Image (cartoon, rainbow, N blue to C red; front, top):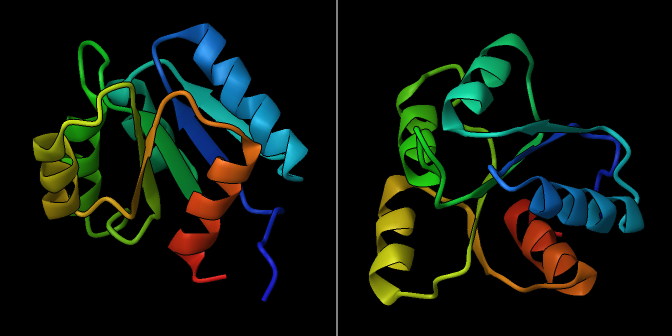
Length: 127
């Protein structure tokens, strides 16, 4: 089964440069429908308006972190099944465990390249 690159992807990061990097990596992988949000609050609002096939969110953001966003998404019946990948600069074991317990589908530590991102996305969708 091939990766469905036609699905919409929401990239959540408070750092514009990181959004641009992830957007470019997704483009390299064939994803065209990429939306963005600057924090968890904005992302949650967008997710209530539109169905996304995948959310790629940074962990450290203000006022709502990626971790808080993940917990809210999993608690919302309409959004709970949305595939979610957490991106962070910290590879702390307790963060990975907390994210897994909260229901994250996968975890990427910065910096990463297109191949790493592709592998993580494929793992989420069982490709």
